[in-house]
Amino acid sequence: MTENYRGCYEYLSAQYPEVGGYEFYKELFPDNENSGERHTDFSHPNAVYLYRDEQSEDKKLRRRKMYNDTWEQDYMEFVEGNSLTLCSGLAYRRKENRLENAQRMYALIFDLDGVGLAELRNLFLRFGGDPERVRRLPMPTFLVLSGTGLHIYYVFQQPIDLYPNIKIQLKSLKYDLTFRLWEYGSTSQVKAIQYQSINQSFRMVGSINDKHGTELVAFRTGERVTLDYLNAYAKPENRVDVNKPFSPSKMTRAGGYFWTRLSVAIFRPLCALQKTYTRNDFLHHV
Image (cartoon, rainbow, N blue to C red):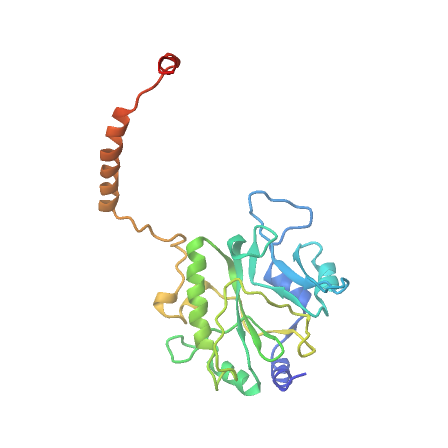
């Protein structure tokens, strides 16, 4: 057990309720399918997690959907006490947990390395309050002890639909808030900031960090959040506008008119020259 882990665990356990892994993911992903269900309209995307197959010789990572009705048994079999399990805050319309398959975001998650007791106290001095004030940060829903640092979870009141342009905007929001969260010498002992994708997977609550032999433990520190709440802590240019799900077209009205007229000018003469040949025409030229 690292000194960072020990100090943070004592601080958090004295003030906030601990949440077990089974309950944690049940709350995070309330809309998963039941096993055997097949919604071809993609109305029920599922969380997807990876786990180390401890029974295989090569200890290979395997991918598995998180089903609502079998989650308790699956958690005990594949996650609890496992040396490497990974899960993001997104739900996917297929089994592969790729960004192009991501359909909804249930939580925006940050990885903050190098957090000890001093850094944790500094974070709580900044969490909450007026977002216009310097160094203020949004209050997270959960803090998870990762081994040498924290996983910071902002769980949404309603999941965010991941249209193409929304994914791009969420990336900008996450980068902005990562920069605010990560301050060397104050909130982190690590100098280099780690910017991560919105699709990044994290070690799961209840599993074991095999590098340090510590269990990943979650604490409920706040309420569910809205996108507007997180936006308030970011620069205006890095905020998410859900009313802009697609990138705007770069073609102007004048440009569209020009290319239409040009196409007509080119193809009309070609059409006039075109001739329909019959079978007799073909035989005549043979």
